[in-house]
Image 1 (cartoon, rainbow, N blue to C red):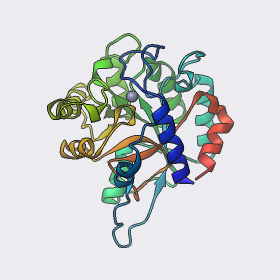
Image 2: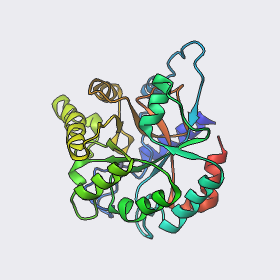
Image 3: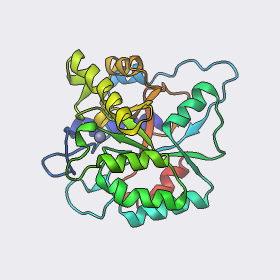
Image 4: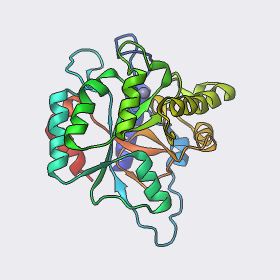
Length: 278
Ligand SMILES: [Zn+2]
């Protein structure tokens, strides 16, 4: 089942192209629209499960992936979740007894056995759209949920992006700020020097902005390979998330964790179906 999903995603990746972007999605600048995964033997190598330590418990944690929280119909509308639907989804999670933790906390649990609540789930919001502050943040506060925000620093203080103040306020509240690079490039296509800069300088800039350590990374458009993953490890991150579809577990390489993409068309029932599959 998992491999069937993978091959379907790989086909989508071949058919569609995702470009780097700097603003709100537009026809010209489609952001993380499709789940890109490396193909063939490389993908198998990247997702190969590391040997599990003796007596290590396997934990599965769904990491949900959101982008823009707005009402919208048009090109790339699947990246949007309406605020009303997000409210219903969060209410469902609350009713079902889920507790939202951050990617950082999940990694600490997997690496250092720090405790997690009984039904952990992770909400991630990619790219730092302003609606994450104006629409999602009030709902997260209302439902008592935390989240991990993956920001690429070039988008901060641009139209449609988060401002410095918004980012600081959300970090101060307890949302995790993770790095999504400096400029959202395809990290597999840039020079070694630029790659290091995208991974390291974004971490430094976000740490200076929030006053908090940045410990997790999100590959722009899900594009990575073993070289990119190695650089993320060497830069001091605890782990990284991809756009590969599925729940995250400590059977995966912690520098290429799977996520569950939430689309506009999921509404509430599709969201429930995606969660019930695991
Ligand atoms: Zn992105």
